[in-house]
Length: 392
Image (cartoon, rainbow, N blue to C red):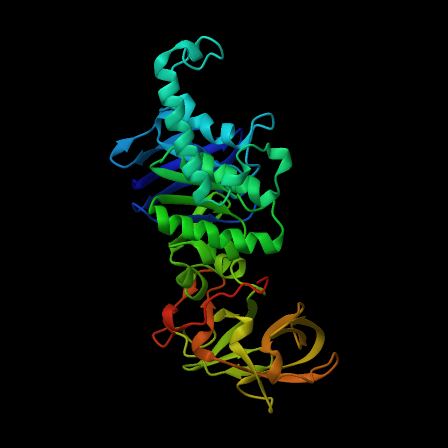
């Protein structure tokens, strides 16, 4: 196990800046996820950690050792790729044994014919086989060692790729979107298995994904990246309930957070889309603000007017225990979404007028530049309903 220190990393491909002065500290044994949309630089940062790309500026340390300029095999990291990168002509056992053979056997010992004549090779090969078998059994693929990748399911190939990384006992596990090629049901299953693997090994994991459900359910901390910048690093519940930036609030959450433009009327009141909400903003009257309202922080009420938002139902998504209700609000050019419990809203239909109450202590306030404006009366992240993956 080892900690990881990333300091001032910059990387460009031609005129395009991919990473902009990224700094990050990862604790020994921590599970940290780099989360962001495609093209934000998260996979490039992971490849720089692995030594597969070289940074233009900045430094990286693993444990107490600087790894700048070291080749990948000398960094004591193991990487699980999105495509799994298994050799199709090799068996599962051979794929998993390959990193051990490359590390423990010399070039001569690996020769197909000459190596077999050397007495030390038999002993080392037996040790490697034992390690591979033990790791395969721990992953539930011990019965697949004689098969080739083409004979395996997606989930089985993913376990083989993880097993190939495990046999090395690396200081750091690097995972680049390892679940993206799996169907939704198998992704949920494999998320659980990866979490249990981390708990069992206690190793440092750096995980890259664009899937917020993976990041929120797997991680000790989440590092949100957008356009090559690291915007916030915090535990999942803080990223969801206490974002530093409007861009983070809009990226995290399913369905997406509602954003409404408002103006401070007076202390304790904000005018927004034809209503006035009782929200105490630390701003002068007349100050324009943007209100972020999570869909689950809305509830049905039997009256309109002050303190409520009124709209006409455009569409309803039935998600089992929940309903995602899309509404048209006066003065709003995009749908406003409420997440309601199906048992409490059984008779909602398109075209119906609904009145929605807002939990003011859960409303996020942003300046028009996107900076978070915090209030003393805000709920703490631990008291906020956590992110839920509706795909489950």
